[in-house]
Image (cartoon, rainbow, N blue to C red):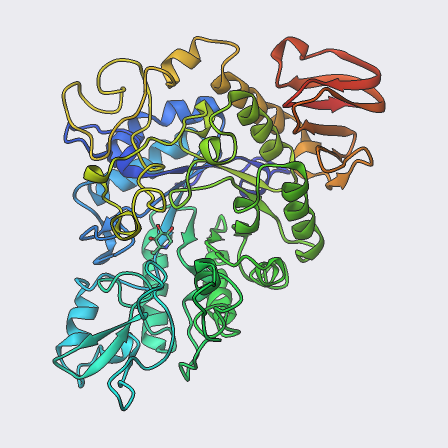
Length: 534
Ligand code: NOJ
């Protein structure tokens, strides 16, 4: 059910991966919500783009308090998105086009509507009580420790259950109780869930909150937070000591890896490793072969879009990752404003430079749906906020803006849904930026992205050669070699050049320069980038 591999090529290392937020990709039944049938109908776009695999945000059954990240049945498809048969058809149809399907696994917490939690909360003696993290109040009635809630650090990470007189841990919403990964039955149950989907030809999992599923067995206090802490200190930073990145989480990841490796072809694990310390991130690759296949690098996501910060994030990872570990790069996802808007201020020239970076680095690029057309964030007004973080903190910190419907065409409904149907989140300006218009335009971002992906696919050095910093790099110009190729990004408003370069330009952000001979000097106009065969 998975596509045949190509000799000498490992799809998840050498290919390009693409994230789809299923509710926002394509609505096939006119209800204003994207669905699996819609994704099946858009597979040709993904094949033309040249992607090797797609990661779908959760498709499993959910009350949708956190839009799929609150799972009430791990082995069935949410009715708003389709059926299990649709998921199987998606795997099969994608495979026909050489595309693998990666699903989202949410093991840190379930929904409070999951039968496990309903049973757990029913009484202190329930057989499922110990599937979640329960603890007695302190003598004064306050929560068992000082852990803060990730969605709202002003609150404790604990919710009091009046009926039983105990607190349960919820690092996210109160309706997302944390599972107890010290319980062997929880580990077994998740083995079964992994097998359920692997047996259906799913190629791997992106693992939600991967770094934090195991908590300190003694529930010790984190270092206290202060009023001037950045909220990331409590979420992903140095103060997250006992509720994340515990040594024992690696046992769980190794167990999943053994299971994934037992399949033919091997399945893969991609971690949402939201740790900002690059040393810690490296640990999630284990010895390079026994934990995650790919670990998302949020140090890069959080960097500013300038040569100094991006280069430093990349080079730290290059230095710290185990020898046979494989980096992965993305500018964002459904939790971060689109890099087109956040990094590039919606400047199309900068978007092209960013795309060259992702395709030119050593490591697997992950595109977020819409990146290929440089789709910007859509501002979602206060009256349309659906994300629980947006409801608590307002639209700026909320995550709706990056989750709005894909822009396929300039006609009413954006090619996403039927004309006149109100989409679940607002459309944004689909006339300004859409797949259909860019398909017809050889100088569009879509064609540029497609050519870049094709170049990477056709050029073994772009896939596998080591990353070596070019000596011309400084805080504004970032250049590196991959074997006999030179990748150069001018991230300034000024003309710049790299002396001592001879060769042919394989791809330039200014397409009229593709194929240009470089004779001694590579000249780069403001905010431009090129890949040179030297
Ligand atoms: C990370 C997911 O990417 C995010 O969307 C979700 O809200 C939290 N984990 C909780 O599951």
